[in-house]
Image (cartoon, rainbow, N blue to C red; front, side, top):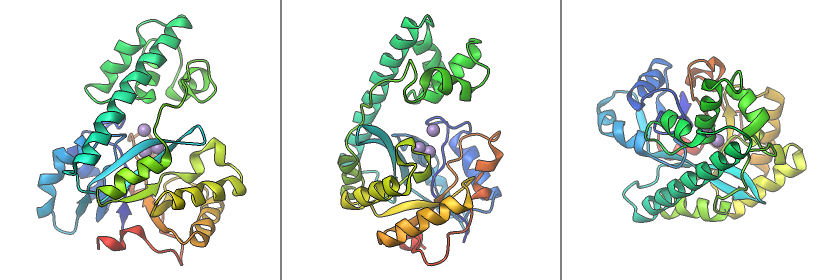
Length: 278
Ligand code: MN
Ligand code: MN
Ligand code: MN
């Protein structure tokens, strides 16, 4: 079964409108999907009513929350929760406020570095979605400060760079709790993407803490990940007796290696998190 339980629409920092993302998922042969925008499920909500009649395709409620683990930013995907739950709606609202506050701080730092107008620029790129660092990166490209978004992160926005702000997100435990309280499953997103968990020991500690926080699964089948490192994650997930998820983390068509069709199969011996829904 082809599955993609992590992708972004333009309700956060993705390129495609939710309906176009849905069309891409289906064209790529995905049968079970979740649109997991950063700190919002508006993208999911705008297309969810159309999906029940789509033969051979199911769309779960999804979200990607930002959280804080040992003072660093850590992402948690929520799947299959009840979007009508007041607790998760309050959580989304509070994350939106944090996002706007962080955008304000980031723009102030850029201004101090001699780059004015970043807040308006980023908000224009966000086009009504909550502003994130990729929107600032697009502003920096557009205003000729950097050549591409990667350079924007390398020079200004990335961890430890001059415009980076302190982590403002709630604890991993709180975020996993929001998802569980709304009847969903919490999934540790892209475990290989964290600079603070590069070693096997640190990755094991992160996965262990995530399980203690009520996490249900870890992303294992990830588009574009090195097979030897995926095998390492698979071993740690299996040792922790957590389930495994699969996702592309698709944002834009130019990143062809992150398309939904590039999600590899789950390594043997792991329990898929999606057995709940198929
Ligand atoms: Mn993103
Ligand atoms: Mn993420
Ligand atoms: Mn993501």
